[in-house]
Amino acid sequence: MDRKLLLHAFDSLPCLVIDCANAANPHALFPDAPLEKFNSVYIIEVEMLYKFRDVLKRLFGMAKKTGAETVIITSFRHLFNYQDEIENANIYEQCWRIMKKAGTKCRIIVSVHQSQEKMARKYCDFLG
Image (cartoon, rainbow, N blue to C red; front, side, top):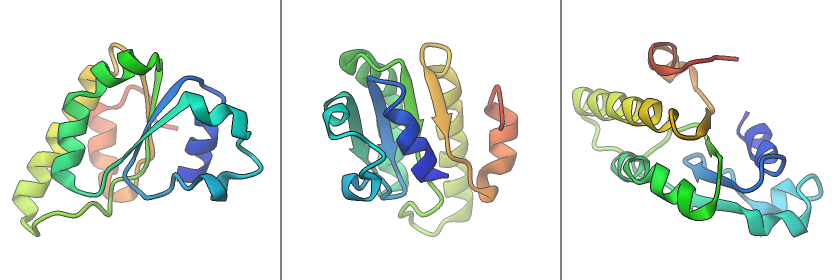
């Protein structure tokens, strides 16, 4: 799913990608992603749950600065965290609320792992 979303980014230029799945390897996307379009795809790599939340807080500003009307977020089930289930659940819910709010100003497409499906159903306008 992450690969499909990344390829979709090249059809939605300019596009901002929040890569939580370490999936935005340009070599892996070749030849399906034309080299000349890479200048219009902006990628922010995220490996930690707290960094994910902090990036999301600035999401609309970054989208506006890059001119991106679409933001793609790869699956975030493997983000580094501190093994506190309650704290993680609270941060994930905060992330979903931030995405919901940002989604009123730009189009956000998220790769949803089954572990996040309940939150996605609560906060997403469309699942497909």
